[in-house]
Length: 496
Image (cartoon, rainbow, N blue to C red):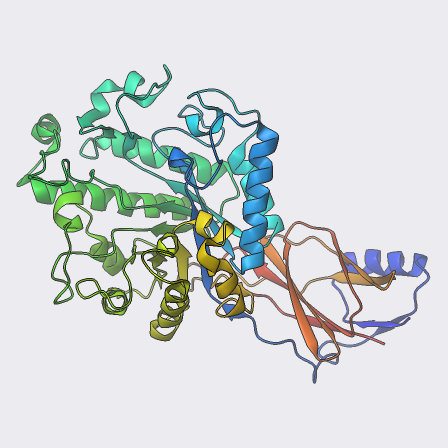
C-alpha cells in the first residue's frame, strides 16, 4: 500500500527512509505543501480544563493514608483516566499540604497522607509518578503548594525533621494551626527555595498556590484573634502593620514568579485566591471575609503587575446568588485583568446535589466562555466530584460542554519557539498503521488527528513517545505542541 508523506529533515529522513525500505514498502515523495492542501484537520479548541486533586485530609487522593503503593497508584491512574475521558487537560495536584511533601523533598518530610506517618517513605515518588501518568494521557500537571501552613492542627504528630521542630522560631500558633510567619524574610526565602527545587527537578507544567497566605481569622463567629507576629513586626516591620503584611505577601508573589521564570520560563505560575477581592467590590457584593484586609492578599495587584501567568479566583457561588453573583464577579475579575494574563476561575462542582443542580456547572462554563477576553478556562473543586460523577455532573459535562477535546491555551507573554516540522514514518500494521516518531526537543505533546470517511479523531500523545498505533485512516495529520503551548506546523499524510 503506497503511503504519501512529506519530506523529512536529515538525518532522521535517511534513517526512516532506510527503515521503510527494509520493511518492503512502496513510497511516494511529495514536495512541501503539496499534500493535504484541500484536506485540513479541524481546528482544535483552546481551553484550560482542570481539577484540583487535594491530598490534605485525603480529600481526593489517596483515599486514605497507609495504603500500599500499588493501591495508591491504581487510585491515581483511575482518577487520571477519568479526567482524560471527561475532557480535562490538566490536573492541579497538592504536593505540600502542611510543610510536608508528596515527593522526594530535599527540604521536608514525607506527608502522613501517604503512609499514615510523617516522614515514612511510601516506596515511590508520587509526584514523579503523577507527572509521568498525566503526560501519558495528554494532561498537564501543576504542582500545588500551601506556602505558609505548617500544620492543620497543632495536636498532630510530626516528625523530628518537620519545620515546627527544626525552626521553632519561624512558627506561630494560631487557633488550631501552626503557621510559618510570612513576615520573616527567612520564611519567605525558604518557601520559595523549596518550590524552586521542585521546578528544577521535576517536569511539571505549573506551580500553583491557593488562598492561604496569612491564616483565615480565628474564631470565625466572633471577633478574630490577632495573628501573633508582634515580635516579627518589631524586627522587620515599617509603618503600619496591615500594609506591611500585605507587602510581605506581595513581595513573596513577585519574587516567586520571577524565580520560576529564571529557572524554567515555560512553567506557568498560578494563584487561586478567595473569589471576592474586597466586600462591596463590585458594588452590591457581600462577603463575610475581607481577603485584602484579613488574609493580606492583594490579588488584584498581582494581576495588575503581571506577577502571575494565570489567576484562578474561587468563584464558588451560584449564578443567581444575590450578594455573590457568579457572572458579576467573573466580569469584575475580567475587567481587572489589565495585563491580559489567563483568567481561569475555580468552580464549586462539589456542591452539585443539595445546593445546586448539575446543569449549574454546565451553565457556569458557558458563561466563562462567553465572557472571556482571552482563552477561556476553569478548574473544578474538586476531582472527586467528577470521578464519582456526583449527581451525574461528569456525564452531563461530557455530553455538553466537553464534547470536543481542547488543548491548554498558549501564554503569549512567555517567550517560546514553535516546534519544528515533525518527522514520522508510517507503516501498515494489521488493519491500521504504526507511526514512528523522530525525537524533537521541547515537545510536551504530539497532536495526532486522523480521518476515516467524514469523521476526524484527535489523540494527544506524550511528547517523548517513539511510536504510536492508529486504526484505519485515510488522512493523518501530525504536529507538535511545545512547552509554552505553541503548536508547530501540521504535516498531513494521505494514504492511498
